[in-house]
Image (cartoon, rainbow, N blue to C red; front, side):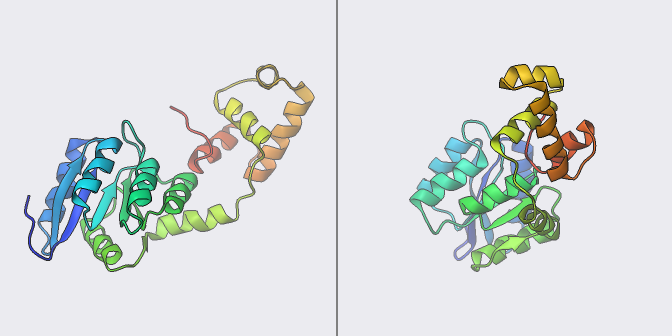
Length: 211
């Protein structure tokens, strides 16, 4: 783990050792960049950042103990000037929006090329933001989305769980007819025509998750 004088000091936070080691190898092979810390979970990421205060932190979105957005919020709460990049496999509209709102300076998916990863680190270290074209497209699409009401979200989650109209009505304490009205509104707002399409679209936009 080199720490050359004047190098951009980077912290990595990812619960997968293979991913951490691969990124570290790429970055340590670049002139002027040095990986100084590696965290295995969200809590450790916050602790290591406070200890070393790296120039740039690469944070995974899904980690044990503390998820990526919470890590960003906690680090930025202690160090408002912290430069944080989300590097993850998840790129739903909601994930992107939450991360950037929390204060992340860039959002990358893990299929990013080594060249773009390095370019991103140099860019955010220089005070710029970095958003890939695919992520930017999702952000633009997200801005135009019509928000679902709390009740519509409840119905959508029940749909994603494979519940029938009767089961949804029982779970939410509403009538079958009201369920049908909410489903019609959900279909309209998501611009879909079937339950399957609604669930697929909702998962893609980060409105629901299917584990």
